[in-house]
Amino acid sequence: MMISFIPIEQGNIIGLEIDGKIETRDIEQMIAVVEEKLKSHKPLRAYVQVKSLGGVSLDGFLEDLKFALRHLNDFERKAVVCEPSWLTKIAAVSSKLFPSIEVKCFSWSEQEQAMAWIKN
Image 1 (tube, rainbow, N blue to C red):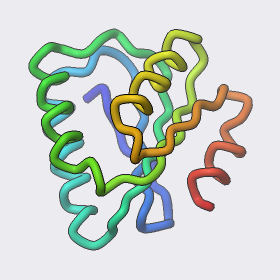
Image 2: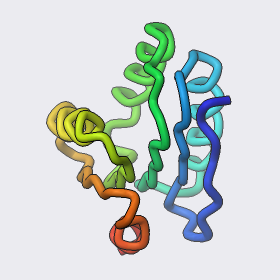
Image 3: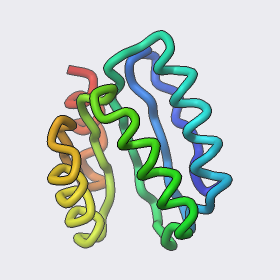
Image 4: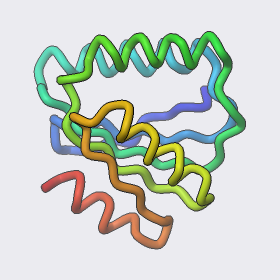
């Protein structure tokens, strides 16, 4: 699985780490965990570390998009920890597509600030 979960004590935060190409099965597993979390915590916040991104399969992208559209109002913040500048651009596009979700990008050296921001 190219998406793994980062344990975070605060119940309204889901932690994810992305490392490699994301396939449909990765998205489906992530959605199952997030759907379960949404039963007890709304709105959710997401803390995402992107180690590497080898792309997303078309089916995976479509699954993720359908999920995002169904849950537009169930998320309020997303902290993205990444290095390459193009990932920052993707996060900026994401915040324009989903304006109800506050998205902020952090570099790897700013992990502590990212975690503090997502928790507050």
